[in-house]
Length: 318
Length: 239
Image 1 (cartoon, rainbow over the protein chains, first blue to last red):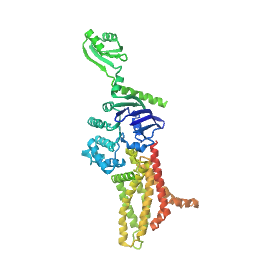
Image 2: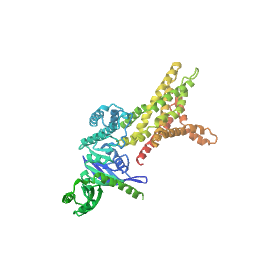
Image 3: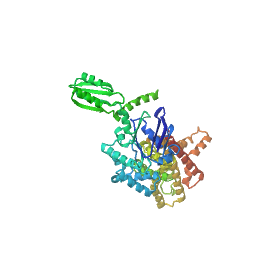
Image 4: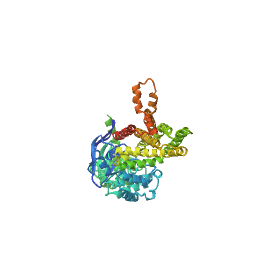
């Protein structure tokens, strides 16, 4: 449904997006994840026809976004990053305005506005002036206008930024409900956000795709080589000695904390250590107060990638 | 065409929500009355020729107040992104904006109809020159607003676009007015400048003469600036 091929965007001497390619099949929810300044919004703006790519191509439902821009734009419902709205308009008035721009006849508009108002919880505020609405309600209006013409593709740029946890939950649920009816591309710089809503995560940093896969796949990729954290009542030397002897252990790092020794055991790639470590503890008869896989969470993976971004930027300058 | 009207309608409504529109409205009503009553005396002709001439000068300062926000505001608030990602062409956007401003300009002219009533009450006016005078005002206003639409696409700062509009209009009015009387300018050049002089073209309308070449002058220069505005909006996409 969304096809992106070698997309490149230069802003003067700065390279914002560098050779991004991906495909999104119909009905999938894709999370576009990356730190601020990674090139998420730029990529999205090229997809929606707001910015022309420096090179490369993108198409929506087979229509090229630069050559058949108007047709492509009709397939897209778009919520821009800062939720720009006409503050002096009333909610319903604004939705009618959007509907007219999408060439919806009056009867269709009335029906569609009823539908999106229900969906996005706008029934109570339909007659209110947008400028007087809270950030959360404005966000709902923004999503409602994107949904209005029942687009095949829904592109939401940071739909939850600036919202409180309850509102974030509501938006997340809304996106879940829309699953299957639309192909959805949403961007965020907050990981759990994307992890919970998306079928697939594309991590982008420094204008390049760093990882692409389902949240589970990505976690597995990261999970391999997850170290195990153990706290036992023993001296650090004996713990170090015992754990270093376990098969499949790459490195052991022990710290003494009073009576307790806190060990971080790093496995060789592909090894699962917890069972054997447990055995070792039993044989030594140590008291245990903690043992867990230090999940190299997606969070860590993400932070690692984010850290790499500064390097990429330096490279492009050099 | 529907899109143009949609944009224009929204523009007029939003103009009525902005304080600047009411300032312009008040100043225009006040200014036109002052100019009118300045020339309103027994034994004077029952016409509005002097009022019209004065209004053309007054519009230099007031109309840019309406046009300064047209496109700059969209860029400033980010709503331009909503418009440009809708199936709306840049030409439709610019035309809609200009048409919206024209709609507001029409509202400005409504209070001046009271002055027509005053002439009717105290004299026996000739409605021909009044009608052509209003047509002339619309053409001049359209031209000024086209310059304003163009200037509002240059900067997202409304003050800059206001100043730029006033400056450009002055080139076609005030500057020519002064230079064409300066002795150091050769006669040929003076004549060429006269051809660009807005007030010169307007004069006939006030007298009741509807000259096609005058109409062409205003329509083509309006179209020229609107064309520039479209090109400017298009170029924003490429930056």
